[in-house]
Length: 604
Ligand code: DGT
Ligand code: CA
Ligand code: CA
Ligand code: ZN
Image (cartoon, rainbow, N blue to C red; front, side, top):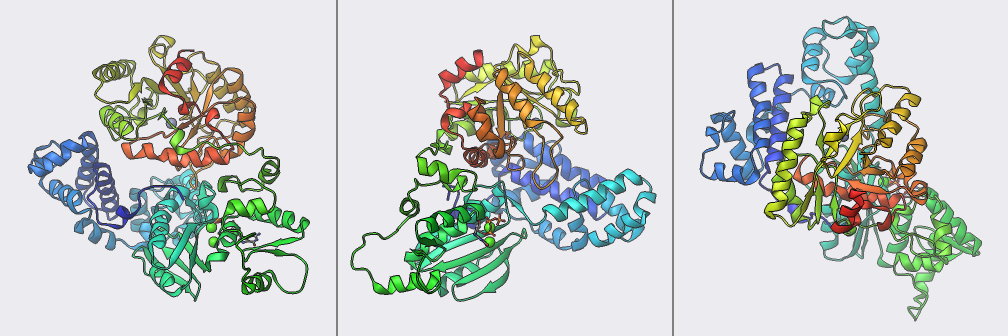
C-alpha cells in the first residue's frame, strides 16, 4: 500500500475552502433541482466562486474575527453556513436538503450532460422521476418533443444513460484508494492481526477498480470480520462468514475481506493481487517445475488430494526447520526462479519473462519526483492562487513548480489574454525574486491547439515563457486523420515543450477523441517533445499501455498533476501508478530531474 493520509480521514475535521466551495456548489445544484428561486441558486454558486478567490489563511482570519459577512458576495446566511462547515465539517441545512430530494431525481444527476434544470423540466412536464422512466420517455420520443430539448439532446441523454450503465460498475483508482487506505491501516492495527493489505486491481494501480480485496493474516477471524463490517462507511453487509465478509460502501464500491492463517498470507496476497493473466502464467510456470501454486500455498503437483489438502498436510507435519519456508512475495517469486515482480507489472504482459532474465526495470517512485509542470491557478480555472500553489509545492518538498493556465481560446476556463498572461509572468518573476518559497516557479501555459493545429498565441508571446504545454480542448469530433494531423502540427511548433492529455478521455465518463496515438508518439520523439502522463485520476492520459514501447523508443514522460487546487498536486500519486504500469524508470520521467538540469533542458 502507499503511504498516505490514514487515521485523520476517520475523524471529524474542519473543511478547507475548496471543500466548502464544493458543498455550496452542490447546494446550488440541489436547490435548482428542487426548482427553487434562481436568485438563491445563483447566490450559492457565486458564493463558491468568491470563496475560491480568498486565500485559505485569509478565510480562517475572517471567520475568527466574524468578518466573513463583510466580504462582497457573502451575506449573513452564507457566512453562517461557511462558518459551520469550516469549524465542524458538517452543515445541517445541507443534510436536510439532501434528504428532501427524491432519490430517482438525484440519481439522474449522474447522467453525463444532464443538469438540474433539464431534470426539473423533465419532472414537471413529463412526470419523469427515475432513470428508467427517462429511458422510456426517450424511446417514446416525448423528450425530443419538449421545449428546449430536441432530437439531439434526446440522443445525448440516451448515450449518457448507456455510458453510466457500462461504467457504473467500476470506480476511479483514486476514489477506491481513499476508502481502502484507512481501512487497510485500521486492519493492521487490530489486535491479533499480523499483516493486512489491499490486493486486487487497487494494489496493481489500475486506473479503475471493480472492487476492493482485503487480505488479512490473523489467528482469530471473528473480531476482524466484526470490525470490518462495523465500519461507519459501510452501507450494507452483503455477506459475513467465519473467515470472509463482503460489504458495500456509500459510493456503490464493494469490498471483499478474507482472513487467512499467517503462513498462508503470502500465497493469498499474491493470488488475490492478480491479475488473472499473471496468475495463470505463474501457475503454468510452477507446474513446469512440478509444483502447484494457489492461494493455499506452493506444493508438489503430484500425489492425491487438492492443493488445499496438500498445503494443510504440509503444515500439519510442522517442519522442524524454517528452511524452505516462504514468508514474503520476494521468496515466493524466488522459489520459482524469478526476481520480485512489483504489483503494477502483474498484468501478464511479459513481466515473468523479464523477471526470469533479471531484466525488470527499476520503476520510478513517488519520491523520485522533484517538481511538476502543468498546474492551474485562479488566473484561469484553478481554485488556488499562484502563491498558494507555490506554498503547497514547497510543502511537498518540490524544487520547482510549473504553472500552465489556460490560453485565450479556452474562454469557458477563463483562458488568459496576452496581457493577462504577461502579467502572470511578471508576477511569477517577482515571486521567484522574493525567494519567499524554496520552490522555483516556472512560467508556462496550457496553450490550446486550435482546430487546424496552430497554437493559440503568437511566437513572440510564447517566447517569453519557460515552457509550453499544448492541448486539445475543442472540436473533439474531428475524424482520426484530421485530429492526428492537427496534434502533430502542434508538436512540430518550435515553442512546444510538451503535449497535454493526448486523447482527452475522462475515465468512466467519456471516450477520448479519435487519434492515431502511435503516429503522435513518433512525431513527439522526432521533435524532442515530451508527452505528459496527466495524473488527474479522471485522465491518466497517455494511457500506461502505450508507455513501455514509447519509452523504449526514446519518448520522455512528464508526470503532470494538472492540479486545479493545492490538493490536486498530490494526485501525481495516481500518475506514478500509471507510470509504473508503463514500465517507466526515473530516467524516463522529466520531472525527476533536479532544478538545474530541468532549466537546462527547457532552454533547449
Ligand atoms: P477488479 O476488481 O475487476 O478491478 O479486478 P481484480 O483484479 O481486483 O479482480 P477480482 O477482484 O475479481 O479478483 C482479485 C484477484 O483474484 C484477481 O486479480 C486474480 C484473482 N482471481 C479471481 N478470480 C480468479 C480466477 O478465476 N482465476 C484466477 N487465476 N485468478 C482469479
Ligand atoms: Ca478487485
Ligand atoms: Ca473481488
Ligand atoms: Zn487541459
